[in-house]
Length: 67
Image (cartoon, rainbow, N blue to C red; front, top):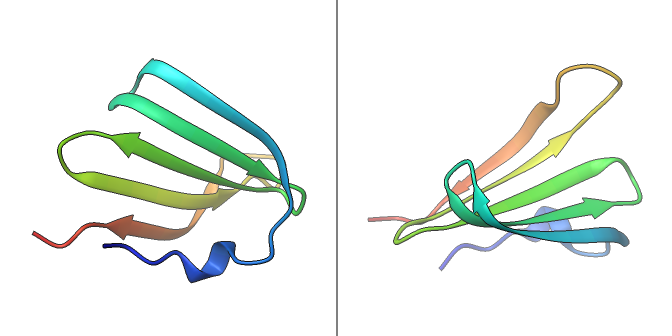
């Protein structure tokens, strides 16, 4: 299990589901504060929270399921 406590209380503006993303199926959540949460749906759960401040997105936190 992965807990994503940084997401609590955020306001979701958009959710996009990609059938064939960079790492297979993925879900992208865009929040009102400018952050984005991306979840790759593979046999191993990987997710990351990023923010785009007008340039290259900066990773705030990476979530990886323990083996």
